[in-house]
Length: 91
Length: 120
Image 1 (cartoon, chains in turn cyan, red):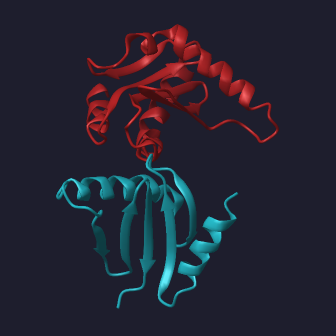
Image 2 (image 1 turned 90 degrees about the vertical axis):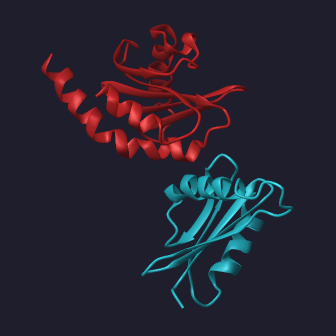
């Protein structure tokens, strides 16, 4: 049942520079994760997405979050009830 | 300790109560807001989780560690920390992943209570 999702995440994970990818549902539960993305981060990632969306409630699309740290950059975006986080090596 | 529980509750929107009980549902430590459903705070409700945890352990996948029950208006998360049980009651719209993540934060408190209960 999760094969189409896994295939999609594999495609993202195999992109150069990507070290991890995580997909979470609206409740903050991890649907799938690969690489350095820890499943326990699903709750925090969903929560960050919800908080960011409140900054511009009238916007048509949810914002893209970019968290930058020394060891990696994390890109987060949500659509309908799914939130996706991509962990990348810093540029 | 109650103050610590209230601080933890303030971290996540929608948490109504955090209870640490024994296997019979008797509260060892309780922190609840006014919006917590009273029925869910009673030993009669909480003790059923202990039974469910024991039954879940017979499914052949090892001991049950956590149970998450999501209802129409509320969700109840339980962590099995024998002989204690940690129960969190929250709104059904609260972030379940964040609630499950609180297990690590409550770990040290539960260890201290476990030591106290063992002495008794």
